[in-house]
Image (cartoon, rainbow, N blue to C red; front, side, top):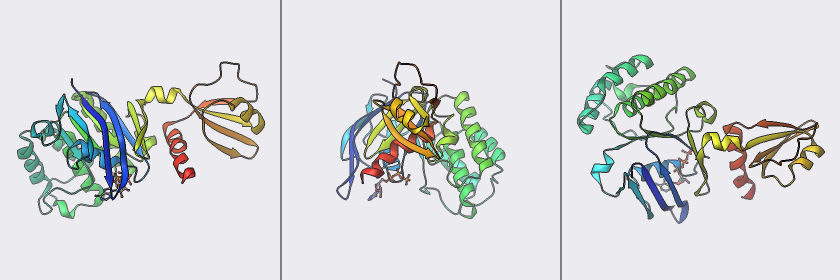
Length: 288
Ligand SMILES: Nc1ncnc2c1ncn2[C@@H]1O[C@H](COP(=O)(O)OP(=O)(O)OP(=O)(O)O)[C@@H](O)[C@H]1O
């Protein structure tokens, strides 16, 4: 089977359970969004997927083969993350060459093109780059390595709005040119929402959403109007949060609506991914 299969992955740090029996599959050539509050375990999960951190239990298979200590499957994957693995004193162009030697292949033409798009100086020394440009260099490498599975952990960290825009466009262009699987962990949900075909939300050690974005959003509603009418109509629905604005109330609902007609004073709008995420993951805070 092509793709990544994750079964019952458990990870604890200092007796605290970070991943509590996580299971999901990643299909070939799809763009996934991995969402979760700070400390939810996104980086831990991505590091487990590339065997940089070992899970306490569970099984991960890449194209049908077990991941653990398997160099052959590891060469199909790349994790771009915060960690600076690159030789600090080297120039950008030397780091590109170093990556080419490491992977046996590298799309140097693509890397040079992207460096030009982002205005990254190939002669610059890595350690002297600004925070944003360090991220840019790592992104360029992630988009130019010849792998089937690319994991991007907070790929736009430190990037200004223009550079983020370039990144989103170039990611799509690169994906269209050479389809592969991407998993993007990000807090900038609104910006990334259009890229993400499939959304995974990590909360308290579990995946509370793992579905196609379109399907998820098709069930996400904001019901607004006078408080009493809104509450009456919302009864029996899966309310995940609410807001008040003067005498108007909005209930956020994730799930199916009633089949009966919508009362005159009630407005029903679709919720965007960020609003859905905020309301779904606020619940944990209330229970603390
Ligand atoms: N090496 C480690 N030793 C101990 N605890 C760790 C270690 N790595 C991560 N943790 C803890 O595991 C939890 C999850 O961390 P992780 O970095 O995976 O979260 P995240 O979802 O990526 O967060 P953020 O969005 O803030 O980057 C945190 O509570 C963190 O403190």
